[in-house]
Amino acid sequence: MTTDLKSRLRAARSKAEGIEQHDQAPDAPAELGDVKGHEDAAPPMSKTVMGWLAKYSKEFDEALPRCVDRGTFFAAVRAALPTLSRCTPASTLQALLTCARFGLLPDGTEAVVKRQGTTAVFVPMYQGYIQLMHRSGEVGSVHVGEIRENDEVSFTPTAPAPDDFVHKVDIRKDRGEVTHVYAFGWMAGGARSAVVMLSKADAESIRDEYSEAYAEAKAAKQLDSSFWHTHFLDMWKKSAVRRLFKLMPKSAELNRLADADDAGDAGQAQILHAPDPESGRLLAEAEAAAQAAEASQEPVSPKLARKRAAARRSRGKRQRGGVKAGV
Image 1 (tube, rainbow, N blue to C red):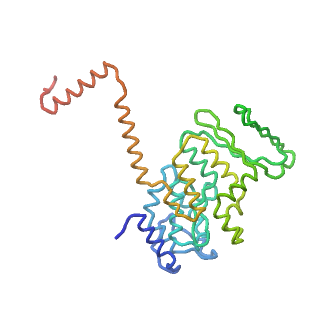
Image 2: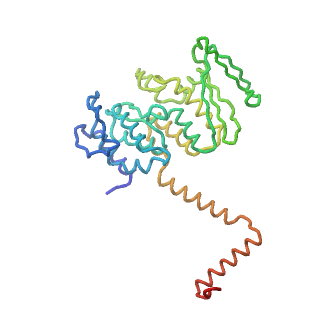
Image 3: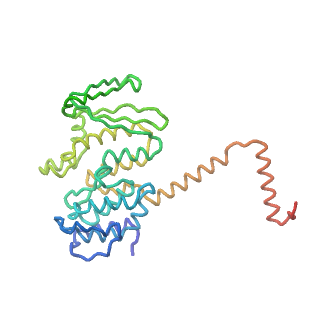
């Protein structure tokens, strides 16, 4: 009998289409089971989905980083579930577990878990990318802004920071439509990155070249199923932030997030790109061992070396019973 998560997910995916919505599911834990107020949602909340999440509560506990509060995460999940009632339980489970492993809240700000047909898809927002930049410990802050038609802007990429970019807003008059989006970051050490600047035409070019979800929605004339249709400005900002993180200190987790983001857009399994809890633990142990090994090879003073040698001789004598009390 298979018990590992990947095997269960594969089995779930093959059976998902045949699961009936009236199947009885086990009671969900308190964080997931309290869905009063959603009974009248149209369509009604799926008990099958709640059951699946209850079965995998242990995997969620292992997936969530310590910096993310479990109650806050599941409160966001509970609010999102009514919109996912038509999704297969297996896809809902994968999308939410992927979100948990990255430590992002599916609250519409850091990330969204949305319905695409009968599939639940994890969509990190630009604030989610920024959250992971901050967690790396090497990024102090990230700024994302909008330039509008009537704003005053000076941008000279070849000038040294901060003289290369000036953005002024006159709050006394209407700013007009957004013409550009920009992003830059400050490192923990005080240095500032280059400024990433994207025009609306740049954003549309990125959308047309890379977003399979947008192309499919456009071809099917389903203009409410793609985030590029419904959240264009947010996706524009995310494109700027994704370019920015390539200019910042490298982060394996950010690269994984971008891969999971692209996989969701292409209709592929996203959880394969999410950090694996077991791999994370092994990596942490390996890094700790490497640090200990490096520390053991650091040069020491002759005096400290003699003390360490004397301590080793003393331990050897005690082990052989050769040290008398009081000596």
